[in-house]
Length: 497
Ligand code: NAD
Image (cartoon, rainbow, N blue to C red; front, side, top):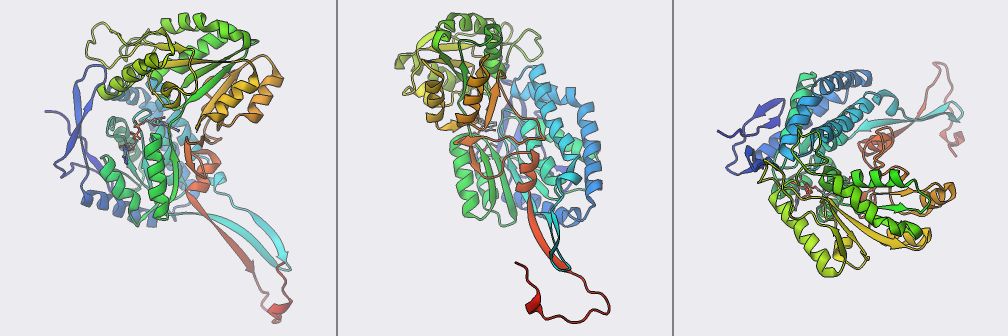
């Protein structure tokens, strides 16, 4: 019998009473590996109530003690990294190495959560008036909600709940229904680390469940990662209901290739960053803008991409795995056909892609278009598959203009040997993450992940110091203390300004 995934409520793994389930499918084989429930309204209520109750106790746990729980969690995650990566590969299709990276980037956030005592420090000014001090404390908010996408089932849940809980909050996570087994294993290890029950709850479902959670009176913050239309909707609905929202959306990331760049580095970086993880990364490079003489490099890029072959998760030679679902594959194939219709030149066609032994996998081969222009749908829409587009520009300024005119702003990079070109690019380009001779600049957790424009709706970004701001409220206290024999002084004489 197919395994039915449990809900995680109040420290218990419980079977849902729902009658609605969807299949969790191995994208390389179409095997149904589990069934995931769509939680009922009362189960969502139970999860939120349990988080509320846990919050009341947890907020008073001393900050160093909170950090110690995360030290234990970090150790357990490291011990189970391979096992987590195997679960992840099976339900998501990523190669094992890529899945190890997905888990590792999450572990790094847990490490960051271990430094919560210094992250929670407020500010103090002594003597704002005679004998009066003002200081600020940072306090948690209550129950925080996270809604996560399919493409990083370990890293993105770990972007959210460790920092929220380290700050003193409790958390309800609604992971992607396409690969919920990895987040459930994260929850089991969370319990094993000894955290109090109810601090983390995991509920399953889709649009309907999200809709209920977004409007719930006891939810204080909403962290969302997913496609742009849903991110926009989550931001609007959440803020309409007076929640604090951070909503990360889709992307179209450009790499500018200057003619003075180290060519071998460009080719290798571009292949890994465009078709790696089957192009299903929000920081994938999906457009390369070739500047000046670099326009002649299209054939070399094609040769490099042609070497990147998809395959099974445990095939060491596979550069990437299948896309997540049949529907995703159909969508990517449809976009390739559209690119041909729109007049882009198809240099490498990954549509007829066969992986020996896996005839039913959702594989799409590395695909390359050149002569792409900004009015084409393949340029305007996020494809989220192993497809790289080449565009041309005469100058760096023209390349920057192309990027700045694009509605997305997650990340971008430049390959050049000119410090001046790199500095101009870093200063003028409108994107939240910039790489200089680095293709996928996902910041480490002591910085924040800072998407711009349509790639992010909200104010404070994920992890780093910005996460502490997002998951807390600042209280500013002004205090005066009297000596036992102090005379009453008229309040009129105390000037605070
Ligand atoms: P998705 O938007 O389909 O789903 C994301 C989450 O929202 C899931 O938990 C899903 O159940 C829920 N959901 C789906 N439709 C909904 C609706 N109509 N109303 C309410 N909730 C809904 O995204 P996905 O396909 O799982 O993930 C891929 C997308 O995520 C890509 O667009 C990618 O660029 C983006 N992404 C962005 C970042 C970033 O940092 N900016 C990171 C990772 C992924």
